[in-house]
Length: 283
Image (tube, rainbow, N blue to C red):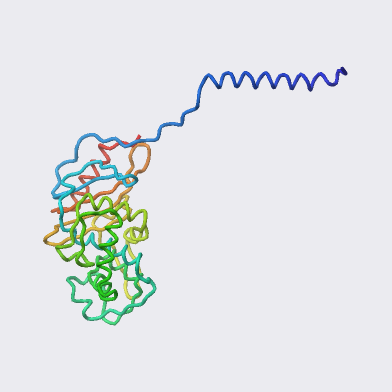
C-alpha cells in the first residue's frame, strides 16, 4: 500500500475508537436530566385582615397560597364591571356608536364624566367603565343592549366555570350581584386567558377620551399592579380582584388577590402582599 494512504486510514481508525469510547462512557451516565423547575412553597399564615373573605393564588395554575372563607356568597360591588367589560368585548359590535341620554345619568355617582348628547363607541365606553368605575357607562351598556349585557354576563361566568356568581346589573350597585372568593379566583384566570385586553385597560393610569381625560381611581395601582378592579357599596364594603407581579426568589410570579367585605382595602392588600413577599418562596 502506498505510504500516502496510511495517514487517512489511521485517522479514520482513530475516530472510530474515539466514538466507541464516548458511547461507552455516555451509556454509563444514563439520560441527562433537566434542572428541576422552580416551585412555590409557603410558610405560615398572613396577619389578620379586616376582610370577610380572601384568597391569594398563583395566577398560572390557581394554586391557593392563603385563603379564608372562600365559599361565602357575598356582594362584590364594582368588581362586577370586569364581567361587564368582558361581555361587551365578547358580544358587542365595539365600533357601534351610542349617544348618552338623560336616563343614563340617573345612576349613583358621576364618575366617568359622561354628559347628555355625547357620542361614544362601545369600545370607548370601556375606559370610563373600568378606569373611573363609571356607573353611567354601565347604564349606557344596559340601555344600548336592552339589558342583554346582563344576561350575557351570567352566561359568561357560567362558561368560565363559576357556579355561585350572579349578576342583576352591569354596574355592581345591586346587592344581588354576588360571588365567592373561589369563583373570582376562577374568573381572574379566565380573564387572563380569554380577555386580557380588559385587564390591560385596568392597568392604565390615565386615558384621554373623546371628551375628557380619565384617571384610574384604583387605590392599589402602584407597585407591580397588572390589572383588576376594586369596588364599594354599603352592603359589599370594599372589594378587590387584582393581579400583581411579585418578585419571589427565582423570579417574578404573577399572584392574584381576591378580597371581599374589607373595611380597609389598602391595608388588607398590603398585609396580604407582605405575606407573599416574606413567606412565599419560588425556588
